[in-house]
Length: 372
Image (cartoon, rainbow, N blue to C red; front, side, top):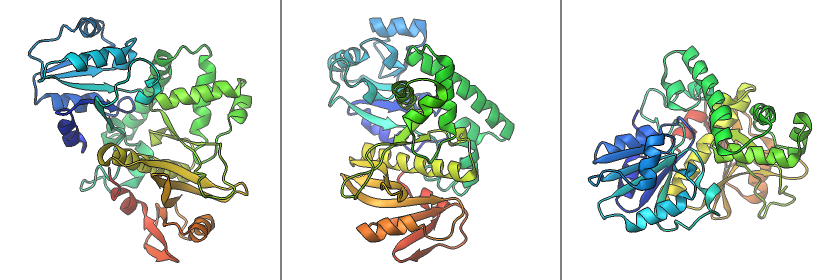
């Protein structure tokens, strides 16, 4: 299926190197090869021993117009390699780098690539990306299948479940162990399983450590690995100008909503979190914004699920409810106390309305209007 970012990526590779980053099996390689159909293209994957040799010795065809480098971050000193390649390449050569690990994990190693690349985050399908298709209003499909292309598009529910089982196995046994030498395989898998059951709740490293039998420092390290590989993303509380706000305790959400174990409310909250993150990253990537996704919470327990931060200031606060048609009291408190733009997004809602300045909106209408 066509991905909306493809046109912007085509424009950007004419100007600089382009990095396409995101979870495994989200469609990065497919997207890169689709773009490659318009050029004399060489595709090289660092996981392939033959391709690896070609990369290291720069033995690709001199007629190459687009060079696609997959999983390059696994190469020692890959940033130095790219810097040298970019600075000495001929004018016609365009470079597209794809991978399933976050670039900012590596910013402290090697020479700087500043000013030489654009980043594009490719995330799972969203109602916004699939607007004007048969799927734009099918919120239950997004909740149950997740937005990864293969399980989302398959006709058979059982095929989606089989894909997810293989996906989990690949994440744990291949990606994580490839990324970092883990001595306690059982422990990291248990942390992963516990996180699947704690969507929407603040995460206590100490509590998880006690359950698993490892140190809080190790729990934090494991979660950082999950983040680096686009398995989970972390949302931290916003503190500026919010009285008595907590400064710790993040919430963890999954890039694959189908991985969430819990009631429909937890899975729905994960879907909204992912939609908002995709919106924020897209606006940062393509509009040059400085947005962040946070949540609000005070020490006495008043909490709102999400806050969109633009250049350090709250732009909007959002509460996600699977079925509750009444305005949440905490959303009302923050909106009135701090004069904030507030929205309550409800999955199962018959009629939208605005009450005391707070919008009550259907999830499908809210999600399809996001940037991407």
